[in-house]
Image (tube, rainbow, N blue to C red; front, side, top):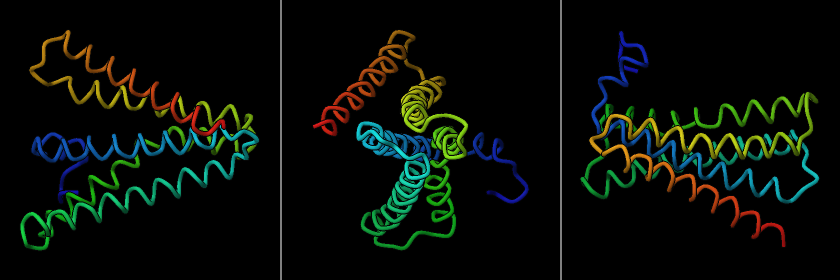
Length: 175
């Protein structure tokens, strides 16, 4: 966080490239969490605590991978280590992506506490992650110069892709 600035103020002052990095990392993590959640869901006989742990460990691994990849790719491209500001931005982009799994985590935690069935919670987490992809995309393209019909086509394409991911994962793990 920039000293003296609240999160929303930083987002307003972030460059388009920094905003794009944050969006990109959020999409990466959401797709990874969707794949993991689907794998858990289609195997059946789900334990909520195990599903929650799987999601959190997978997300932590993905976020660390994103952060390390940023550092290494910067070194390769620029032949220099990142500056402190660059590391802070990469850290914020990578770890900020964890916001995309708050709802699925809450759904699985509620099931782990016995508030509802684990299999229902896992499928609800899958639906929440698919919806998160749509929301991220809709918010990302909101301020662009794309005509309205291209925006709708883009969100619709992502919805179709999300359904395809769900279908492929379900088929792959049901055999």
